[in-house]
Image (cartoon, rainbow, N blue to C red):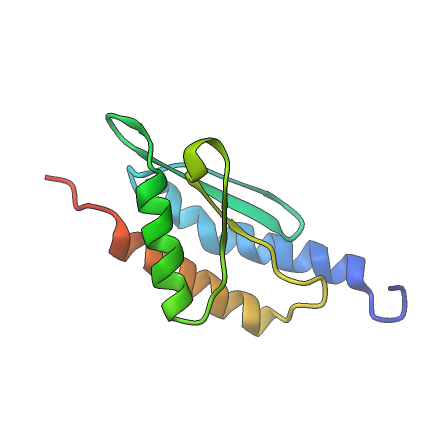
Length: 112
């Protein structure tokens, strides 16, 4: 762990993820983005109706088709969770965040 500076990598990649995902907060279907280190979750909710488990499942499926494995959790499985390994590279985080952001944007109903 010390030799490869895993803790430093976790901190740097966590900051990178926070920065990359922060733009999603403008989406009305994104209730909250939360994370610490390399454990990140995006809670999805219908702006007028509450938890959006079906939407989270659609995001998960769309991301998987692009090569990114995501977990679901939280109330009604409405939180899309990303948990990369401690030794993940900046390039992999960048790709994963791009896939995740695109999957959310493409899966969310458009505002009328």
